[in-house]
Image 1 (cartoon, rainbow, N blue to C red):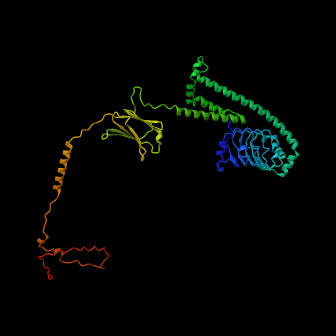
Image 2: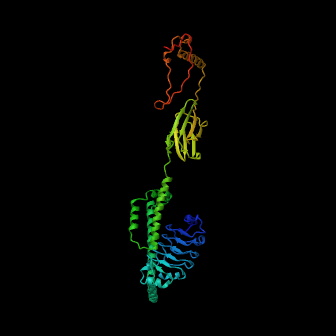
Image 3: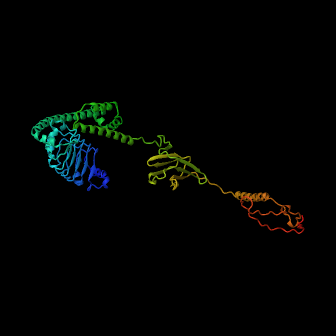
Length: 461
């Protein structure tokens, strides 16, 4: 059975910084809890406790919660009100949609003098004749029952008829308890039949009823795995349909049976999912004939470069940039290279034979790529020729000659022998200041006038 754990309580106490000793309110609804325990030791200061929609069959281990003011245990399997005498500050109790048939058990709430609100809607006891009168007359401190306020006249009338109503309630309780005994027997019988049927189906599928059962038992594991893979067959669908369409009385046992059935189906699905993950076929890297295959399971981009200058082959594998290097495993063989990236193989056949011992693997600090340098097994020896130097010298000479030929030779003229006047500079340009639109005036370049010996400056001309 599932019970309240410290981990669960701390997880649900996030609003209190995960501190449980000072916790005043906690919600543990819909956690499939089957037993209520430890809360009276861990959370002594609890004032509000939500436990609705679980599988709790009995109210227990809450008697030490002296400060508890509101307890919600709706939608559970509770059949009797008990163990609440110690909750001195209890003001509101919600028992909606449970299985309380012993209505006389509410007498245990007489000691909860601060109890003002009580909810019993959806319980079998609410169908008893005189139910409301009995509760109103028994619990004098109660102000509201099933969301309906108790009036003073209603209480007076209930107290007047209390002896007769109490007798009727006792008779109806006895009839209900006999009915519950039969329902329990029927539930046990149905559960046993279901177990036997399931066992027979398992044996028939595995073949345990045959004469060679010993041999079948040895292969039980393999057959069981095969059965898990094909659980969603027509028979399973039929069983599913039969289970949900079969008319069943609403009892604590049927509710627990439904929960168990759903849990089994969920667990079966999880097992199938896990088995499929484990039983993935291993990737074939080398065939039976010894042929090495090219494999790229991690689906990474790569480039293979033949570096003839350094006589080596370089593999650039685009590994994820932030992948930890410890998750990479590089294996260089003479004819192929294998890299395991997080357990996924990348394998590539090399065009030439390489030296595994001289190979090196590095990670790029910028891109994170894996760069593997693999020297070739066949070394190429290049002889140094002296002709190359003479060729270089001759090349230099030809270059120098070409450079000289490209140079343009210009004739030099003696300016002193130049006797023609410069007619373009006869009239001097006048500077215009403040006329017309503003223009950027070019800077006046002062040139040194050349004086000519044979030139005569005639102003009349």
